[in-house]
Length: 120
Image (cartoon, rainbow, N blue to C red; front, side, top):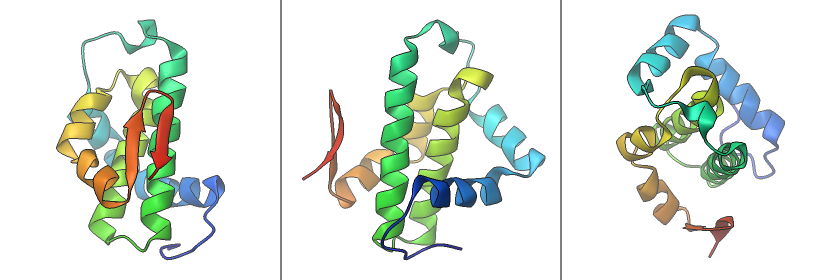
């Protein structure tokens, strides 16, 4: 595990994500949990990239600040949902609320603005 590293790269986060969701059963469980009937593909592709980028920044921040395993898992689940949203029609807002991502954003000093997430 890479918890507690100060200089996390995107590759490190993706390795951690792969370890958690590589198992097909876990991926299917995530898909069934957040599947929506709304057609995500019709939405602006730029929005998908922005939301996924925000989720990646959150995971890096939680890991670099030695977040609890439960917080890292929540942020990783949110990131995986964002990544797979278009492919499997997943409801990112539902995941945001269920994983209580707002609490993580507040705790780790990030705020949502229209241009992305910034540190305070």
